[in-house]
Length: 387
Image (cartoon, rainbow, N blue to C red; front, top):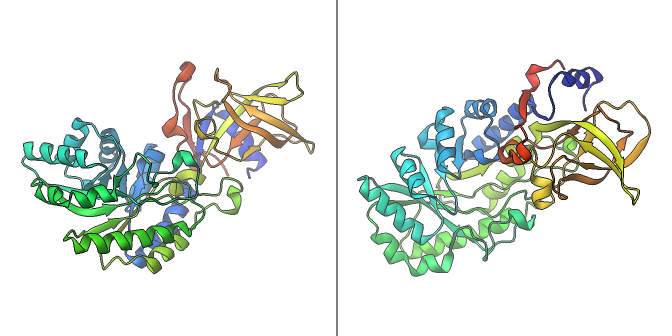
């Protein structure tokens, strides 16, 4: 909750903008890192969640590596001061030039998602006279109990190598001279709130490790991805995600055999530290009686609600009214899907009020576009304002 003083100070910034709570970001990183150290786990930050330079500088200070999904993300991580030895590169469709760039920069591993991709990496590495470390991304066929739009681990998903295909091709995999299979990578989805799903993941990893080991394929590290969800419904009740429970589950159920275990968190690190601040432009009532609040933000600043029906808590931070009304909060883009919430209870809301769209530090700015030639939103940091 904002104090009246802070809310009024926010009026000095042109809306819409992202407001980042740097103190909460540090608190979140401290929680993740301190518990990870207890088990010797290795953490990578999924830079696709948010690549704001200030946020990256804080993440780097806590010693995390980076999980990248494109060549430009690798470049961004390197320019932000992250070491190549802490960078992993995943993604179902890597361009030749991106693979070459990753090999040339000598990153920790390329997480390979198909056998055809493995052949290509081997060929490019050979042309560079290199041997590239590889993490094989295996599709574990696990239902992560999350939004189907961000489910990446079921059998029909585009992500990962089908296990049966890998087993039938082991002789070919071992014949490749310019790749070294160093790790196994699995990632089953995002925004996972039912933590017992991670138990299923561990059981599948244990089975795969044992079976592939019997075929003579071993791994130096295990990468179990990320996916830990955050509380979008009541963010103030859970500002820092439950890293301790996830790590305890992995420690109890994964038979890692002394291998380093890697994690790739994005949303869990940055979602709660960011919020989108937007101004009310107009009030409007439709012919059916629905009350609209039209704000100056839109799907161009925060795509998630329009893209896959994601929920974000919305707060009016400047209204002094004790009267609550139910509104549809909608944006300015010329799309009927440009709706932040169809029915939200807010204090009486009028032109000029500031609304805060919570938990938007992840996949907010990183998905922003200039559709309708909107300007990209600015960033404001908590230490830029008086608390």
